[in-house]
Image 1: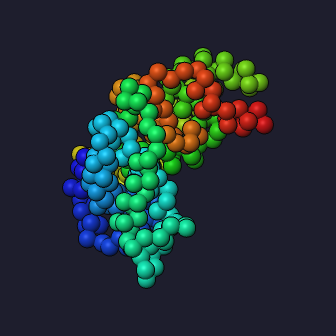
Image 2: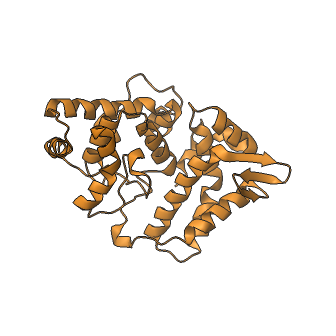
Length: 265
């Protein structure tokens, strides 16, 4: 669970203070190592809090990922004050206390049944998942649509084309395939280099990432059982946006509702 802690890019950061790590995370957007260092520092604490509430291991992993997804998008708002930390309207004596409070709040939420959770922590560590989601946000709307429908819901391109035709948009299979290939390639390109080095090229820990990035198949295996799925987030932002194994056409249509407005506008 904490293999990142041993990486040479992370080990030196573990001696920094919370404030130094948060400031670096906020100021250096092209690096993911600071978020990983915070994850290494507090992941065990968060996991322990979740375990003490009697959830099943599958639900604990699900909540664990949700906590870190929320923290990823909240760390931008963290301010250190003489009294502790302030995050929007929330205040706490320390970053540690604030993280525990956030975790406790999430525990109160209703969870899907175990049979509906397909998230696998080992396949999609929260830092990698969060940066993949942020990378996906840079894609064009159509590329995002094609990537999400093919990689998350395993639609073939013919089905994507038929769906778009119903929405009044006509594309050839060649055009959609180009959007798919370019979209997946761009996702890897937009990832911070240290995220690639830590998660996608573990054998090159002491070397800078090469110009040639991992292949599309290596990053997104074409199987829901091979890749950890996204945990309950905005559908426009994640390649791994389904946590329900028997996804229905209705849920897919809900996920694509925003794209209908974009593509038909």
